[in-house]
Image (cartoon, rainbow, N blue to C red; front, side, top):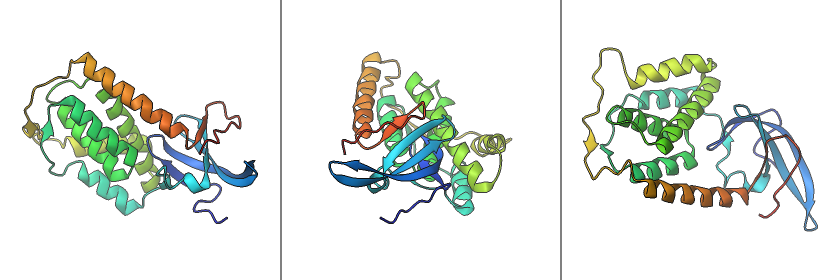
Length: 217
């Protein structure tokens, strides 16, 4: 079976980050030979085993070009649609973007939540989402441009808040602000956990780098 990615190739695993294909191998499952990618995620030192035929469905892709990386950085300082003050809607919208996992989607999350944080402190879940998206953006763009993560972190901050420029915090849709509604936060956590369980059916993650598989696909 022909594979899209090769051993030693850098790839992006949505919501996980940049990784390297360390092995492509077969394993017998239900009497058939199934081909797997073994991917080591750099940032978390985690190993993931993904069936080759499921890789595209999971959004695994190659790292963007330098031009695409520059376009994502530019997007951080572009004009944008008004930001809703409904944190539950905002969180779900950005979570959906994170799952899509394109570099521009990740940049959109970072821009949205950074500017919203200047209006009001983000709820815990959104703060974690912002931190995760920012780290994913730094990692991929640093690989794409051949720069260090620290250099890209500094450039991202400059794009979000250029020296002497007024932050675009006036663009906020005012609604009933439910940032402190714990019940809504619980709903989001439950939804996220269910989504995580579904993702587990498509791939196997092994924090200790042992070869464990979930073949329920």
